[in-house]
Image: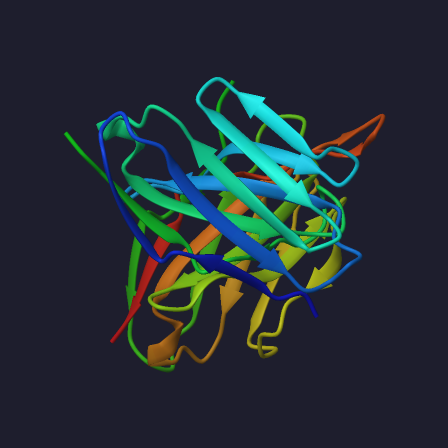
Length: 112
Length: 115
């Protein structure tokens, strides 16, 4: 089955700096890669997703890149703010509606 | 538009008992997914229901079961509770559109504690 690895497990950045989280996946049949943000006591919230026919996608301060050949994808957050502090999860699946396989999560702390 | 709702928010049971968790999907969403988020184990896929049928099942024992009702809400049942079943149980929903099935949106979860 699919296996997703996520690095780093913790990330501390200064407010205004950029944060990058990287994930690798094992199943070449995976075609859909969402990223979720989970704040304390809440469920995961979708922040951005990318499909395999696209190499990069941006939404304001957030961008995701996908390298299908290398089977890895990354989340980039620019101009970080304290409210970006949370746990971020990457995931992979064969399609948007199929079961998601999650990475282990990255705890991001943005220091003011 | 209301998001995915789950009840109860917290549930305390003793080993050997049964737990029932409930989920109401976003209006218009026909698929419901269940995930377990145990401490140190990340998010793991449990079950997927669509149009009342079980579509896929994760690597969990048969004492984890569920169902989806005609109004698309869902129930997760955990029988013969074990201490390691203590976790946050997350429900997600998605809808079918012309291009396929849309992404999954999560509820706040039910925190189950087994003593």
